[in-house]
Length: 440
Image (tube, rainbow, N blue to C red):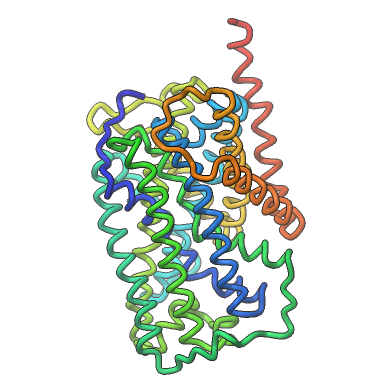
C-alpha cells in the first residue's frame, strides 16, 4: 500500500467527510420521516438521534483510523479485529452493495433533481444518472489530489447553499410561523418501530462519515488529521441538518411537509421565499450537493477493493496503481460500471435502504473491534483514543444491534436481502481461501 500518495491535507479530509455526508438526504428524507412519525418534534428528535449515533461512530472510527492509517478503512479494521473472513464479507457487501449502491443513489438523486431545470423522461433521467457516474469515475482516475480539490470546492459550495436555504426559510418565508413546529397529524400513530424506521431514513442522510478512513493511506499526518476530520466534520453536518430541518418546519405547515406535491420538501420551503423561479435555482443546488457526495463515494469506495486485492482476496489487477496517477484505476472503473447497473435497476428509496442496513452490520462490528483490540493488544501506539471507553463503544454497538433488529421487523424485505447477500459471500470466500489452505 506504500504506492499511494499522501496528498490529502486536513481541509481536504474535512471536506471529504462533510461533502460525502451532505448529499440528498437532507433535501428528501424529512417528508417520509414525517409520514412515519406524525409531528415535527418527533422528526427533529429522530434527526438528533441519528446524528448522535453517527457521531459515536465517528469517535470510534477516529481511534481505528489513527491506529491503522491504511487504505481500505473498515476492511483493515475488521481484518485486524476478526481476521480475513469477516473482512472479506465486509468487502463483499461494500463492493456489491454499499459502495456502488451509494454512488447509484446519488446519481439517481442528482438526475431527479435535474428534472426541476429541464424536462426529462424516465429513460433520459436514467441516462443522465449514468453519465454522472461515468464523468466522476473518469475524474477519479486522475491523481487523488484532483478528486480532493473537486471535493473541497463542491463541499464549500453545498454548505453555503444549504445554510442559505435554511437562513432564507427562517428569515424571509412569506408563510413562516413558529406555530408550525407544534402541529401534528393525529392519524399517524408513530411508535418505537416507526421511530427506528425514521432513523434509518436520517442515517442515510448522515451516511458517509465512515468513508474517509477508506482513503487513510492518502491523508497527510493521519494520526492527527483523521480524528479532527471525522469528529469535526460530523458535528458540522449535524448542525447544518438541524438548521435546515427547523427551516422547513418553520416555513411550511406540517401538512405541506407531509405532502409537498411534485417537489421535495426543501424546494417547497424555498418556494415560500424565492417564488416559483427559485425552484430552478434550488434544483441546480440539489444537483451540485448530490454530485459532491457522489464524488466522495467514488474516491473512497474504490480503495476497499484495492485493499482486498492487496490481501489476495480479489484478482491482482484490481490492486494495481496507475503509473501516472498512483490511483487504483481498475478498482475505480469496476465500481463505476456496477454502480451504473444499479442506477438502471433500482429506485432511490430501495437503494438507500439496502445501503444503510448492510452497512450498519459492519459499523457495529467495527465498534466492537475497538473493544477487542484494546484487550488483545493494549500496547499498540494509539495516537487517538475514543473518549469514555468502554462505555461509548459499547453503547454504539448496542444501539447498532437495536437498529438492525428494528429494521428486520419493520423493513423485512430490504433487510433480509442484505443478510442473504452478505451470507452469499461465505462460499465465495471459502473458494478463494482453499488454495491458501492447501499451500499452508
